[in-house]
Image (cartoon, rainbow, N blue to C red; front, side, top):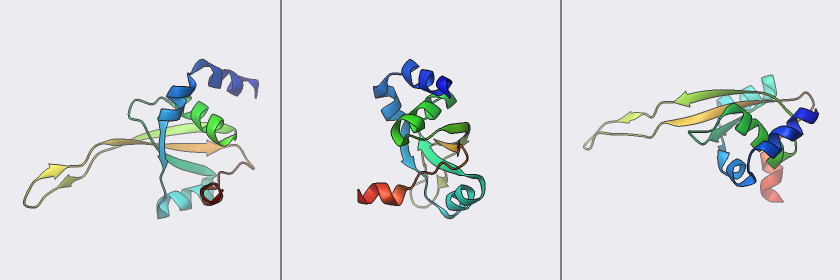
Length: 109
């Protein structure tokens, strides 16, 4: 448990505030959250797993077991003007058993 506190100290607080961009709310995200006790976040493209872990622990005051990261390729959009959406990165954050992040409660407060 004491190693997580050390992890928060090694990164600057400004950097940790910029790592998490938004929670990913979708049908798949809620299914994963219910089944595996994981939360999905959209994160900065240059974020590392230790930074993501430290940022979630700092912002939501929960303990994190593991972090998996996936790079999502931007969709190619056709039509009159062909274009492409930006690539982005998402993180599957596995919380310790009994831990939970409730986004609906934090929005009302």
